[in-house]
Length: 501
Image (cartoon, rainbow, N blue to C red):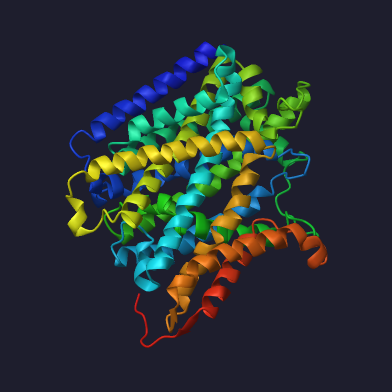
């Protein structure tokens, strides 16, 4: 497909988002609107929009690509998704009521009130680092596709493609913040979901299969195995590891993450926020089934048409490129356009949301902009704009660096990093919730939160030797959280009075 055609649709797409930003922020661009959308969001818009935010380009490209990876992934990712669903339910029933009861703008305000100043700053700092890295990874995925299929034709360097992407995101988020994001995420989710279903239709049409026949073909293919129950010790795909990892990664990356929780906190009350989470959970599980089915159909299509697996410039196999390769070079014009719109929507829905959450967390947790004395302080809005620009620059630098060192599928990289960075948040919140009869020596908390990931890294490198051949996967986040929890117990003492939260 001609790069000029794809570029014109991407430009049109962003023109629509910028127009939405203009109208949604026209009469309300203060900090309350930016941070929590004045706590007036409709739960059904939040639920639908969260699909686009949570799935991202990683799910859109990397998950279908991994179905036929040489590591034998097949549909094992769905085990992780089931763990995610359990995690979402736990968030809705345990964490959301706590956040609403405390009327939080930043969820790390709980840590401040329960554990102390240093614990609070540590938790917020962990989020800023974790979300910056995770969001950069997600944006990287769409940028390499834009680079390969559009900007290489114009000899535009990779770093400039990244910069253009971030400038476009900044242009429609810097003023309206969350109030704008709620609307744009809804639109982007429409593009994403439509793209998935239409891609299935077009691939099935090319394979001369009706939809029921296609799902029967997927079911009988070599790619459809879901549950892996063999060899718990040495297989990272075992259902126990995947379910456990899915639950705790979700609790950490969603329930203890300002990004998705910020959307929940913008609902009118806890009842609407919980309806949002339960609805979102059901849609999330179903849509992931379709993403995995797309992956199987793509590999079946590639085998039938003799399409070689894509590689990068160094000759490394890149399953992340399979979906765009087929959609843009082997199907007709319309499927290619639909793919590009779906990919763009998926990834930018995640990045714009994250950029808003990063700005909110820094402004609230480190600059205290939610405090009554600072809300109407002169220059507060200008400071927020500068923070927004600062995190855009940080994302740019991480993406450029990641492009130099990455060889793995991006979905693997994201959850690997999350196991290290989000584990301490699990430990901090667990200690706050379950150890109310102990007081923490707050100043030592940053050291514990650095030591636990370091120990986990050592264990992960040497687990085969130290643990009789055991191989860690996403369940490493549980070990990280437990180590943090144990460390916090060591630096605490019996409380003089019981804490109430």
